[in-house]
Image (cartoon, rainbow, N blue to C red):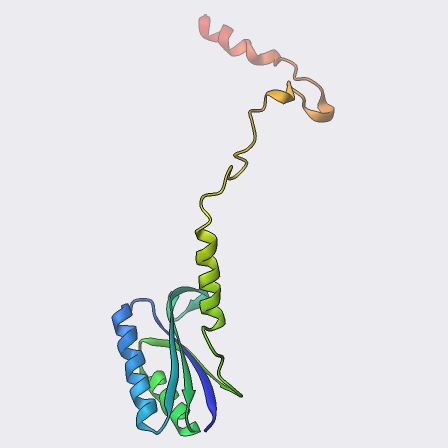
Length: 158
């Protein structure tokens, strides 16, 4: 049987439990039509590149499917009907990827980066005060006092 990778995006308003139920429902349809789900990955709630149907975020789910083409057409039909599914994409592949997908490896790599601890300095945090400038203003030379600085003070005293 042909192999497919199927990714669908569920609305941000849906809870993780609702997304899990939706995944279970789709898996049931696949198995009911003679297919098999070899791997299920939930990539969690992620930001979208652009708004889709007034949503800025979505729950991403990957399913590796081993089944006939009728399975794919049926799950896509049901996802078009379902209001919780924003988008879906099914791609036929020659073989399924072993181990975690690229998105899960990226999440693990990002988690390892966070474990390194806080960074030193921060945004220009390593700079000392500006005492080394001594009033240097580039080509303009030193500042001269304003001539009209005393005028408003004299007018107030009268």
